[in-house]
Image (cartoon, rainbow, N blue to C red; front, side, top):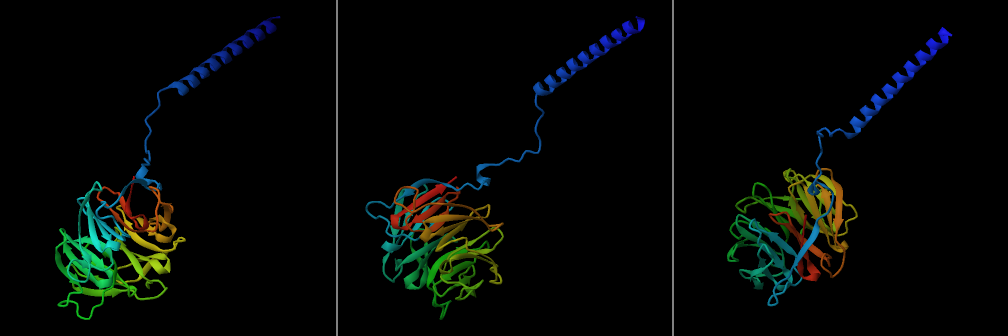
Length: 327
């Protein structure tokens, strides 16, 4: 009988200890589940501008009723936000302020000073306007007010130099690059002296078939929309050698611009879209746009420029307007 009583007493003690342990464990679980959270460290912040989301349509800019845009092709945006359009069908330049309000126009059809025959691109350089006056086989140099300053080729500087310009760009040192109808890129120094030629006609790397768009990335590499070869080429501007060729199902790449993050925006005319490329990984980021007449659609887009706020200004040629996109 004493052994039985001792056994029963030990069992009771064990049960009591087990209950106490379970109760304590319950309090621990409750505390862990309900205690204030610890601060989280090493957070990777993903903002909208670092994602692969395309820009969104913001607005459209049209010419005034007295001077509507007609089949425009080229565009440039100044540091003050003013917008300069190569109004190709009207053989003139039209100017808008940063809010898209019409400011001025200058030029008319002809071959004299401040006259144009198919102005196709425009570049702001050294506080001057450089206009690719294609069928006059020259680049006209104008003041920001549209007054004539000079041209390339200059008879005093560029003897026997032929220029049928398609597009214009400048590098970080102020050198001028002119893509021409003869399937190559001409390079001029900051004083507009001819320096060298990059490329020649062909379908191989470093060769071109109507190089239509030019742009430089943060590494100083030259990106060329090689239109009729249906690709974008990346070149070392010092040697002219191709670093990379990107096709990505593009049909007729033309206007090209690169932002501060080396995102490359290429206008694909015949697909009525803009293709976004990672300029470091050479990979597709996004595409946006489709053919149509409505706001936010394109009808044979062409030139593209970036404003100081990061907005994209895209020439919507057959819709005779500028389509503005941003983030």
